[in-house]
Amino acid sequence: MSISRRLADLFRIKANKALDRAEDPREVLDYSYERQLEMLTKVRRGVADVATSRKRLDLQLAQLQQAADRLQGQAAEAVDMGRDDLAREALTRRAAVATQMGEIGAQRDALTGEEAKLTTAATRLQARVEAFRTRKETIKATYTAAEAQSRVGEAVSGISEEMGDVGMAVQRAEDRTAQMQARAGAIDELLTSGALQDATATTAGRDDLQAALDAARGDQGVDRELAALKAGRSVPAVGSGPQPRAVEAGPSDEEARR
Amino acid sequence: MIIRILGEGQYRVPESALVELNELDAAVQTAVDTGDRAAFHDRLGDLLAAVRARGTGVPDDELTASGLVLPAPDSDLADVAALLGDEGLIPG
Image (cartoon, rainbow over all chains, first blue to last red; front, side):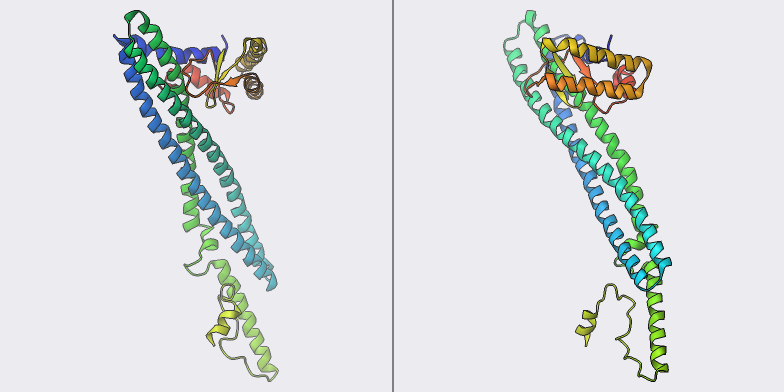
């Protein structure tokens, strides 16, 4: 027998088991309906969880993009100063950031797909639960022992299959989200304490690369002043020389301070 | 006949399409039997595409059990084995 028939049978057996257990088939209607409401809650929570995880990845992507831009700027600055070694270091780090971005981007896309599927599943289940509720009330109102078994069975097996399908979809989304969260946690750690941290630190002082760049710029400034002294010219006033944070604090700041 | 694609929903497929679908289904089965993962993926894709092309979606407020249930497009052989081997995987 083909797997598609065997799968259909599995769902049917599952539905029939519930029916066989009940003394009165009408009990199954209420029991099944309760399960349906639980499943609706579960699938909606699943949608929310996936959305939360996806947003976390969006945030990380933005942070990594910032890191990449900053490293790009540092590489350009290093080249201007003739420090190819620092430029190379910056570009190497930038490549690592780009790799992370590629992986996280792919995960984000996968989660977006899960989110869309689950949202559709939730809408469909909602409509079917509503249809089931209507049918349940009709069956109960017109109930006769003779027709009960088949009518209840029809309604229950229809919805039971939907529940099984949606249940698996939720499970799958939860698995994916869990995997993703483990990974996102690792990236967060990287961003706050590891190799990428230096590149993304915007408030907590300069990173090692920036420090090296600043030091190089300082040396150049001293060389220039020395050359000026030797040439018998006056040394430029303090404050108009190179600034350690020249990347952020442009000349306009200097003008404003005077 | 009503056919469900897991994770996607149910389709009502006319009798006239069943011969073609049975052939495609048999090809999927062969891939499962021989444990050919690549072939399974491709043949399942063919079968699902045919169901979508020949069938029409069952309305959301209709409660019907399916005659055939097909694995989701991105399933692999291990997923299917797990589905068939352990009933506990199908909740509800």
